[in-house]
Image 1 (tube, helix red, strand yellow):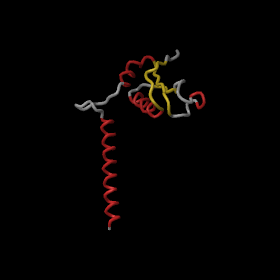
Image 2 (image 1 turned 45 degrees about the horizontal axis):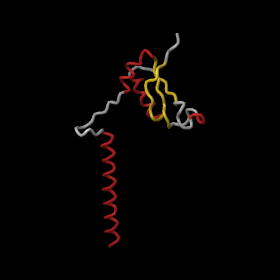
Image 3 (image 1 turned 135 degrees about the horizontal axis):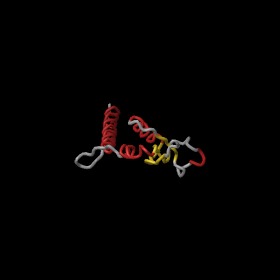
Image 4 (image 1 turned 90 degrees about the vertical axis):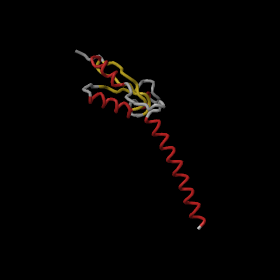
Length: 112
């Protein structure tokens, strides 16, 4: 009997594909990742380029459970902002504060 593979999702790169495949594996679902044929450079490098769309496939009998796992499990705060977006804003703010502190230290040091 041959296994019928079903495309569950397409992700942005190899790293995201492997992370999702690991999540599927942890739930007892085998998967395959295949570089999308329309990915940049796919004709030239095959699957060697880690960037570009990667399709994730599972056996058809696990498709429903895999679809459920493919949905993002992200909690949003009352403003509708995701934790990832909040983290990016925090890092940006820290970089600005760090630059200001470094400028003040340099100014004080130069004036001595």
